[in-house]
Length: 131
Image (cartoon, rainbow, N blue to C red; front, side, top):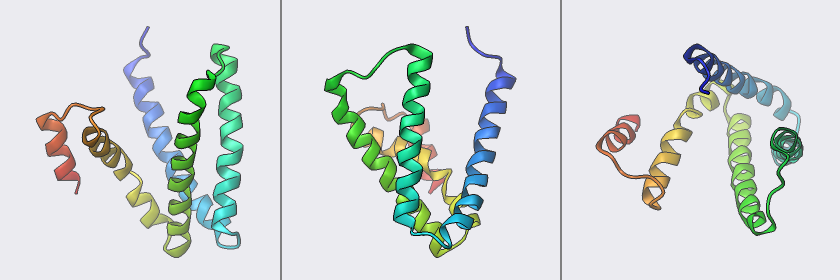
């Protein structure tokens, strides 16, 4: 069963608030901390926590043939967070938060580029309007 529309919107608004708050907290923490170590601790703790939560929910472990995908996904997420944290350290949390919504646009453009998403007129117009 699908959740109610208001719950979906509430979750999306809450996610944006958390992203914004994460930028502010990140700026406070990274000003006196090495950004590489900060990103490593952040991703190194989030991964196991999410794996445990996923196991508790579905009781399924990843198959060994999928571990390669986990490695590449983790590397790209770590790189994303590292660049974001370095950017916050060099500028401020407002600039970092302003760039964060562009991730969906970039992912859609890359997915179209590698053939995982179909290029529809609305997606192409949306990508160009976002830039």
